[in-house]
Image 1 (cartoon, helix red, strand yellow):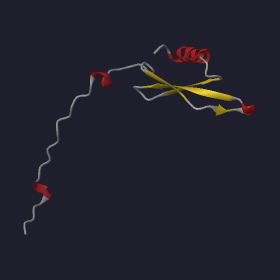
Image 2 (cartoon, rainbow, N blue to C red; image 1 turned 180 degrees about the vertical axis):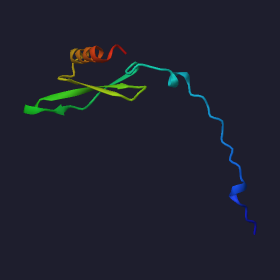
Image 3 (cartoon, helix red, strand yellow; image 1 turned 90 degrees about the vertical axis):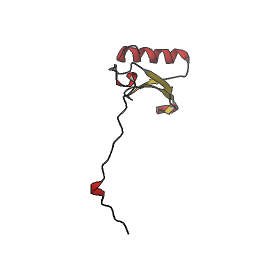
Amino acid sequence: MLVVSADDLKVKLPRPISLPADRVKDAVVFEVVGVDLADPLYIKRGNKVWADLYTCILYRSLHLELVSSLFTDAFLLSFRRFVARRGRP
């Protein structure tokens, strides 16, 4: 029976690879944004509101804006509020 001690073995680690340039460059929060719409939320008196979810792709931050309808005008007002607070993406 052959017994080998692990103390005599040498570990060889692989060379680290460099990350892509778009992953390591400095960026402003919400410079790259994804937009989604959440299911309706029920508030007092049976009214419904929806949440626009603005997600920062680089830092995984989340910005929520409530809208009262699914019309385009409501979304555009939500987007204007987002730009006023966070800057233009």
